[in-house]
Amino acid sequence: MAFANLDFFKRDRTRQLFLIWFFLAPSLIIFTLYRIIPLCWNGILSFQFWSPFGESKFAGLHHYEEMFFFDEVFWQVLGNTVLLMASAPIGIALALLIAILVDTRIRGRNVYRTIVFMSYPVMTVAVGIIWQWLYNEKVGLINYVLISLGIIEKGIPFLGHFGLALPCVILASIWQVIGFYMIILLTGLQNIEPALYEVAAVDGAGSWMRFWKITLPLLKPLLFLCFVIGIINSFTSFDLIFVMTQGGPAHATDLLITRIYTVAFKLSKFDYAAAMTVANFLFFLGLTLLANKLSGGEAGAVETER
Amino acid sequence: MRQYPRWPIHLILLVVSALMLIPFVWVLKTSLSGENIFSYPPSLLPRDPHLFFYVDVWYTIPFFRYLVNSAVVSAIVVAANIVFNSMAGYALTRNFPAKRAMILLFLSCMMIPFQVTIIPAYLITKKMALLNSYLGMALPVCSTIICIFVFKASFEAIPKSLIDAARIDGLPEWRIVLRILLPLSKSAIATNVILAFIWSWNNFLWPLVIIRDQEMQTLPLGLSRFLTVVEDTTGALYAFCIMVLLPGLILFLLAQKEFIAGLTTGAAKG
Image 1 (spheres, rainbow over the protein chains, first blue to last red):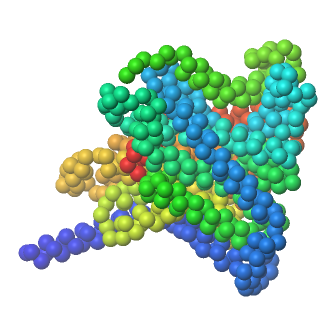
Image 2 (spheres, rainbow over the protein chains, first blue to last red):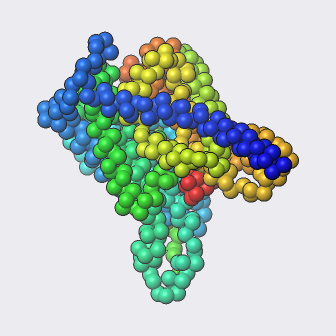
């Protein structure tokens, strides 16, 4: 009798296991097909001479050598990507300020929240077009305002200017993502016990003190989550660049991802682009692990992908 | 706590709101009137609004075709995401060997942005003969890891006794998911619908890479193409922008409460 029971239990267990794997299968297949295999394939491709038409041949470190020592554009786009990344804390700081303000009990805070978040669900291509037009030399709103205020005499071609183009694109990208940072930080603020502040206030801590000693430390994991999202954004903001500047003028706004696209799909140098992708990925991975470590290992558990 | 005067807060937030809204207002205005800031004195509201540019966009480019393509791809992506993510999310709430390894695998997949896989992904899609197809556009985003974890967190918040009772009643597993867990996870579903829709609706790079046929182009591709053929100061371009960004905005405004609730449980327990 006992054996029969065990047998029954075993069969049931097998069936459940089968079901669990059946439930996991679709997602697993998709991630294997479009994440894991491509990642490995990229690695292999970067050590080969390969084109869509010819035979593949072993290339050793040829592409990496070219990339690091002979390709000035690579260093330029890497620098641009790092700059975009370095701008993330500015956006996060602004978002934190807004989040704190809309967390106070003022009238219409829900309206403010909605307005600030509204730019996030908007199609990035459209955002690029809107901002390209705001920056327009002749009819752009920004030039119009600057001229009306008497700050400048005639329009500045913001996106055509070698030094100004990248900061302008960065500003547009902060504009788009700031609402997303704000929502994340707001959820963190709402999870902080109000009692903590009351106790601190009783102990005579000023509001500045309370911010440094309570709010910031408790928000740390979410601040790092935002930073990780910022890192991901700097590696993946393709749409904005493609629409606003196409990477120009003279690669001033070219990022790693836009450069990879151009090299692979416009110049058909898939192998070289694969090597750049590997460098891009390792750089990204290193940074994320570093951020994760600094935040006490919590950013990885909740980060978002885009 | 001491009461602070409210007006500085309102002032800052009003300025921020204005900065966030002005681009939208200006685009809407131009799309309705075509008047640029050349018009003096400049005004926030269009004088003499009309819908000419919207009609213009509808007829001069295959807007309807783009719209259908975008809608089909988004429908596939949203449906697949709900089904696949809730299935995987449920599986991860159960105990099975290799569970930790699976979670670790999913989390490390999250560290691979889709953009860095674009070249092999293109070659794989080509091998499967899915270039230029709806399925090819949809497949890579048919399951998203963050949403799997949102579902997992939401399922775990449901009392275990409820599930055990159903199991004792002899309900098969898939019906437990369908009849008990999903109806109790509305905010997770809303979060997933919104994220999946926004991501697929706005997706640009992937369709750009795999779509060669003009007949198969989606709205973002059509929009960026349109930008290269028209003068970037005409009202039609901005009418196109408005028509493209309205669906995402409306969906978000309708479901933002559930969306934020779902995101919060996901982030807090993820």
